[in-house]
Length: 422
Image (cartoon, rainbow, N blue to C red; front, side, top):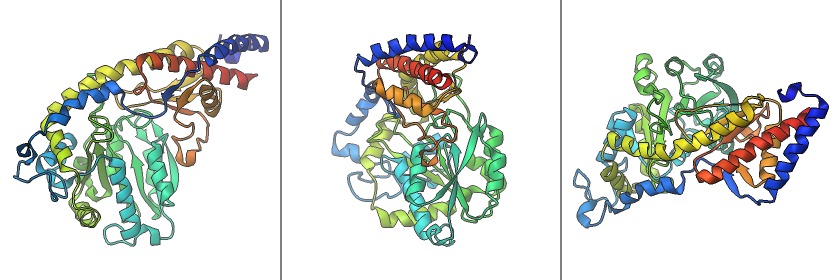
């Protein structure tokens, strides 16, 4: 019998039973972290041999004869640009290889739009209000960039095929709507990959703002969990059909391929956007870390090398995803206490409570020593209107820790639901 069908006496008896379990778990003084999508130590160990790829001065020479220890090659090493040309399906001349953080590249690009404008248009900061479309639930770091620059955020709900494109079509009729943040493959946190129709609809947009830009954060482009991965259309190939290549700037990185703190980031853009970006970069830096770029190329060699490496990651994290999914199926499915995604890749499982406050679940988990992503963080301004979404990050804890953390999460959903019903 589902909780919603129980008598008050049955609900009270069930709550007493779960309160006892809660007290027992509290005595264990757990310290478990499912808050961020970080690789575990066993994943980081996969790339350690990369650090020995450069041993002598001769190893520091790039394919064009450039000494990577020196200044120069602002846009990145030719061989590194060629590698990510394979990954993204974009010509090497339309790629910039940056430092370790794609978030940094995104922040800098928005700063450029704010202070210098886009394509000769008035800088955003001098216009009468700037709005951005934010797909929800979504990535909290995107939202904090908008908050930092005072950009008003407009929620657009995700569907099983990606964001609600009908609503987006209406929103972009407003010239104050200057762009959109999105994660098109294995979205954060839902794990949804945009359908072909969704990608085509976004590419076909004819926004009122002539300086409209979509931040196409393709963070999980090669982060598959199984042998039947999702497929995402190449946004720039589709844009060519509509003449809208300038509307999109694509980003990715090796943060969850090699080392999050010592990977390389990548930006891909149209010819027009590249001219503006490179002009700004020439003022901002002399060059990025080319020894690191060279290490990555020597180690991975090509796209096949990256794919083989990502299978090793999948072998580690796919079982972790399954631990969480099995726990949710076992503990919450029959009673209909929540709904959750079953992604084919990426780093997260998105859970929506159906009969209780997600914030209350977070409070109960914290009381038992399990740290979740701050409830509400998957929405702009930290405000989930329905108070239902919880982002689960299974990758960082050990298998043993994850099993216990999943147990705690399910218990807290049950208790929060019983509290609401009583």
